[in-house]
Every structure is written in C-alpha cells, then in structure tokens.
Image (cartoon, rainbow, N blue to C red; front, side, top):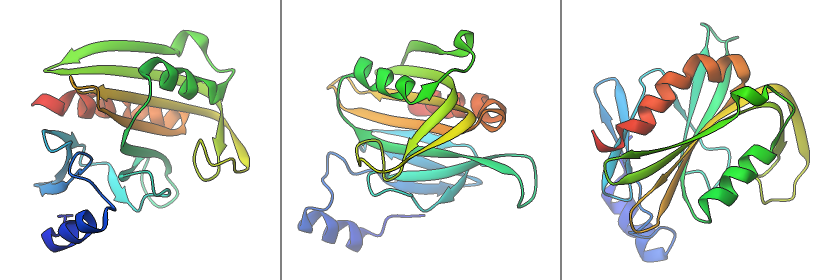
Length: 187
C-alpha cells in the first residue's frame, strides 16, 4: 500500500496528521516496509498479513498466523507512534496480563543504531479493553495469551510501539520474526 500524495497533503492541511507523526508504507517484493518518523524503515515479515486497524489510534495492523487455512489462529500485530514514559508503558502492558509463566516474563533493552529498543515478553490471561486501553470499554479476558512488544525510542524522545498479542502458541511461533522486524529499524 502506498500513501497517496494528494491524500497525505489533504490530511496534513486538515490537521488529521502531522509531519512529525507521518508514517508511510511501501511495498518491497514480498515484504512491506513501515517508515518510522520519516527516518527509518521496519521490514515487515512477508507472512504478516496487513489488515484494517481495529482502532483509530493504530497506524498499521497485521495478522500473524500459526498454521494453515482459514481456521488458523492469529495474533494482532499493531504499530503506532505513542508517548509517555517507557517504564510506565511497560508496566501498563504487563498489568494487562495475570498469571502465566513468570519466568517467561522479561524485558530486554538493546541499542539498534541510534534507537533505544525495549523488547517486552508477557503471558497469561489477557484483559483486553474494548475500544483500546484508555477507552473505558468492557474488558474481555483471553486465557493463555501472550504479547511480544517493543518500544522504539528515538534519540529526541519520540516513541514508536509495536505489539503482537494473541494466543500463546501463535505469539511463540512468530516471536523470532517479530524481533527480527523490530531489529530491522537500522538495516
């Protein structure tokens, strides 16, 4: 999917998007690339299928599958520019899960080029708030779920979130591809 220049210009003029937050997508062979803050690209795995975002705050959404066919279970892979304190966001993400394997819960901080990258793994019963985490909607609990999440922090403090949430087996099967995607920010 290419962002139409006329559409982008119209959205900029209406104040719907800003240059600082403009994130574009371009097709590249069998992969897509998501451009973060107009400065760096993330290579999306070819197996991640683009879908319509379920929420207006999500800029890009993909599905990751485990298995074949229409009955295969999927996980949501979401991407968006966001703000707030890194530690507070990680704690909020962890707080959306109860129980699970405590030894599998971890946070890793790495440097990828000029970016600080925080990779977060959590699992258990996931409390999904309908409409998004701040919408105040109904909470639906999903047993045996997991999340692989990442916060990309630009040197000027801007943040970009990537999260894969779904059944534990789907997240586990796609974690390596997700982490490779996150680390592709400077390739």
